[in-house]
Amino acid sequence: MFGLGVQELMIVFLIIIVLFGAKKLPELAGGLGKGIKEFKKATRAVDDEDEEPKKIDEGEEKEK
Image (cartoon, rainbow, N blue to C red; front, side, top):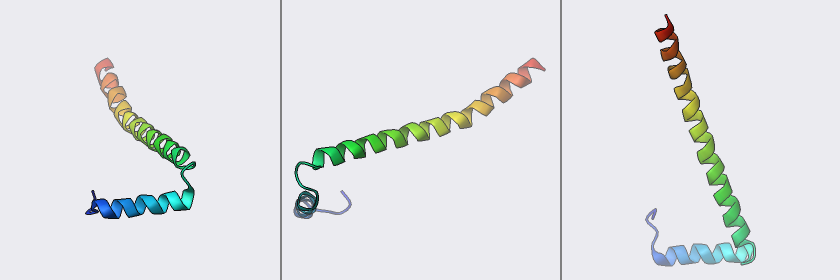
């Protein structure tokens, strides 16, 4: 994982716990999860918008 070993990851997690506190970590993780979920939802919406004009164009060609 990004060239980090177990010891480096433990140090990073300890620093995060010291900075934010153990009680805030679930809230931070939940916020991060919601952010990732919204990002994925937005990228899917953009992909769907890109596909819709193609479908409309194909339908118009069939009518002619």
